[in-house]
Length: 476
Ligand code: ADQ
Image (cartoon, rainbow, N blue to C red):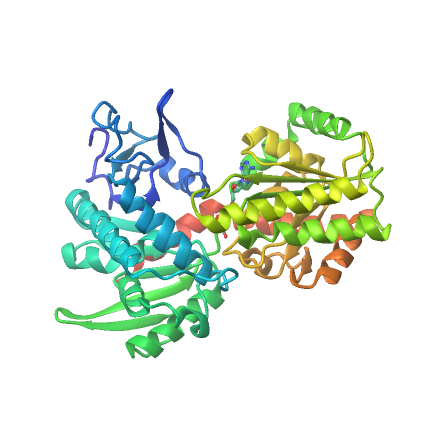
């Protein structure tokens, strides 16, 4: 397992995440699992020897277990190490506690979080499994980078097992204010879990501030600026708390967008849609936080009001299937599909479909061609840690045209003030901004897009990872 891994070359890096960057498929065997985190981490892992610890997506107690080989090595010098989980563990820890309680709570309780004590017990047990595995395999004094809301207890558990490690934690989703977080029956355990880190990173300054306020309130530790001093038997220890807004591999998107084949495909997409004058686009994981229903309602009303003409405007919504075992996700799918079919039933004609809806994942080059084809991108989450889709769209607008309608409640809005910013709860406001984006002059679009592109290229994912790891390395 550890071939190619040389812990002596520098302070070794260990990435700990719920999922490994590969998944097992009965027919094809192991294949890359290109999720957001994998793409984000690729650039820092490419030139560095590292260990990635996570779950592979297969169940330890599945029938075919035993004949499946261990996961292969990742790209570059990366070694993959699997934390085996049973079906019951995944149900309690991932589908239950992580996605039924923590995810909705951290996203403004858009849907009611469901707190089950037994699920939290499983969450703690699985966090312990992860911590123990890291403690077993991490080289001495390694940098350990723990990711996201599924693993919030790991830092403290790991520190108790391996005090020599330098531990960083990054939360990809929002961190809620005191009034909301206080609901969590396990609030103290979660805060103490995170305080086991040397560095806790959030997407935004607001999230970092929320955390610091909560630590003061429930752990009775007074933060000094962006740090908290924790007293332990072995002496006092400083935990740094900062914002590290994540970015994308902007250059990769831009160069793919600039290829002749992509332009050809974008033209073909426009032709397939009946050569409309205006293409509106939404691309999301199918999740109730993403405000997919908001934009369908807004666009439908614009068609009904006669402000948009279904003969010359098309709205395309691409929604990747997501967390299909969780009840709320089945419900949002039904809601979205009802809204789309109602709008098309009321507004369409033979040969005219105002809303095109694709419930499927899309290959990277096809997605890029969609971004190139779209005149206006609609990104309207009710709450989102960052949102990468808006950044991908901007990176693909190599001609500095197109308009971005962006929710104020995304982390990205803090960095993208040149978008058409909207409050997704204000449907009239969303409608106005869609029309403003669609009718903007060439000069205005260019001014906005050029400023947006500057930010997306400057604060790309490489900078995010280098900033985080640099800070972790320097933290003492
Ligand atoms: P997500 O909630 O998954 O990420 P987002 O940041 O938008 O949301 O990333 C989604 C990724 O999936 C993008 O790279 C996008 O291109 C891709 N994608 C979406 N639909 C797709 C489709 N149909 N086919 C193929 N690819 C598709 C979480 C947080 C975010 C945070 C990221 C990174 O919720 O707030 O920005 O982590 O930290």
